Image (tube, rainbow, N blue to C red; front, top):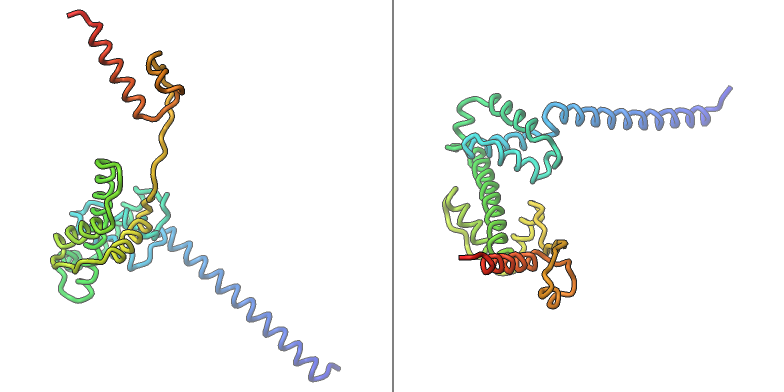
Length: 234
């Protein structure tokens, strides 16, 4: 016959094993729920679905920025199929009552106003990122952090009104850094591409190598154009 201490030890071991099994079962259930949610809604929680719908409505039912919202905020994977996301967003919109759709553009309650302003802020950010890319393409460099902040505030004021106080240079840099990180904007110089070009003999005396950046290619093309024009009989 076993002693009371031996029986108590066995009971403690069984209780410990039961707790371990319960924890493992809970983890499996949570994993299964996440997988089911991803299969149905691409892993989007309800609040993210509402925000995507709000962006979709404020963009005049254009799904492009709503898809961008889900990917920029890392709610879905970056390689998630856009067509599937558009179908999901449209199904979420159709599940909303008509007064909720109207309240996105014309908010009444505090909760509706917060959603409206958050969606408008995201759209102002998206427009700011497009402006940064345009400035980079036109001038060959990204605009200063203060200019980025001022442009964002100008675009946001067009959407929700109001005037934001000016930022210090340090605060503007923090804002621009967070914007670049959220939108995955690299802050670096681009490498030159090498081209294999048949350089004329006189140009080879200036540039010993025949592998250069696009600027050299442009110069060669200009020289050839001038020579062809000179050799063409009038």
